[in-house]
Length: 250
Ligand code: PEP
Image 1 (cartoon, protein in one colour):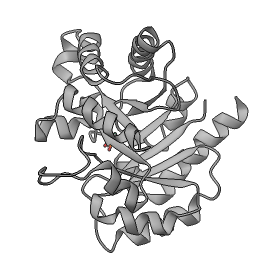
Image 2 (spheres, rainbow, N blue to C red):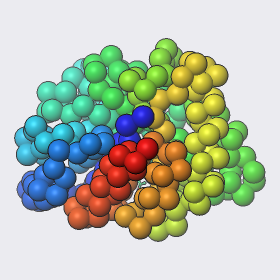
Image 3 (cartoon, helix red, strand yellow):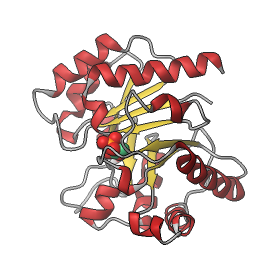
């Protein structure tokens, strides 16, 4: 399966400074042999997509509405993302769940509407530190998967991407161990296979860097959702090169 390296810029580089970052990525990631995608703030998507057009680096939103238009103040719809040149959308990121009260059901609705418009959702799931300490990782993942996938009727590689992101590893500099990540990713794959007969790409996210990417990507994880390190073009390009090399040697 082709690996995917996706960058989540979060609420950074939303204005004029997004273009130099995209330009730096364009010069460092040439004709990528794995999937590459960057998700800038909404206000920068169109400009970044213009810079990256034809480079093989896709652009995504950090969220997407579950309706196409209407009275949904503050939301951006899939047709709007599409018009800007985005082809991916992160849904259910833990920062959306934690700070903006999003849940499994709205995450599923967002993913479904993205799919309807040809936008590839990157659907995030992951446990809190309390759930991990209580030995409740699989229950937490199962609840998030059941809620999100209740109305999604396809689970194959072409349909969407799932990102396993243990919440305690995001932005902390403390990644999961590869064994922990593999165990959770294995659970997610098995759950998806039992529902759809096939599993899509499952990424790992949570303090992935150029130093630890090889460990995760060489052990069967399908890619990375990368926050902090995606803002450093050299390091993000290094992670892409690591993924490409693993694919070449597979
Ligand atoms: C993320 O934002 O999804 C993420 C994984 O961030 P970081 O790589 O900074 O932990």
